[in-house]
Image 1 (tube, rainbow, N blue to C red):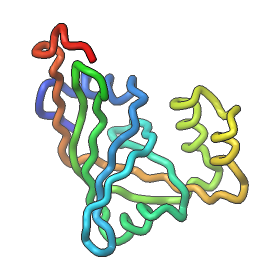
Image 2: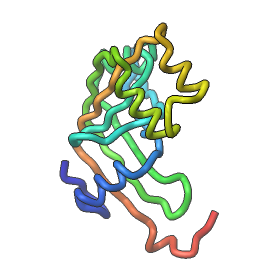
Image 3: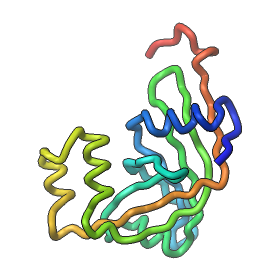
Image 4: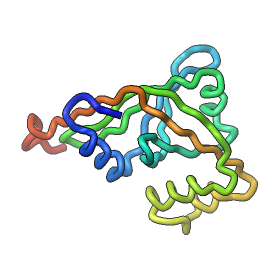
Length: 149
């Protein structure tokens, strides 16, 4: 992955590893319309890793068309982030290892009602691996100096 835009690879990876902003993921439905959703992610080995229920609509959509677009960006000024496109693959997360990592990353642990619900033995979990084909970065910090929300 060699990004274009404001940052080099090292800075891009630092942003992806250091932020706990959900990834906004766009894909095609079976009816060939566009669908957007937000998922927790983990950046590892040049890919974005997400977890979701095996019964989630996005799992079916990706089985029909694995092309995706994504964005991970700040919601407060100064705006900065990473966007791109690529392909997604889905496989079982039988032991929910990725889900546990994401719960640690986003919630600080697995000791919450939400974590208990997501880790329920009755819930089947999958991993989504997003392999970027193109990545673009932007950082409006300089031009937004002094801007506060």
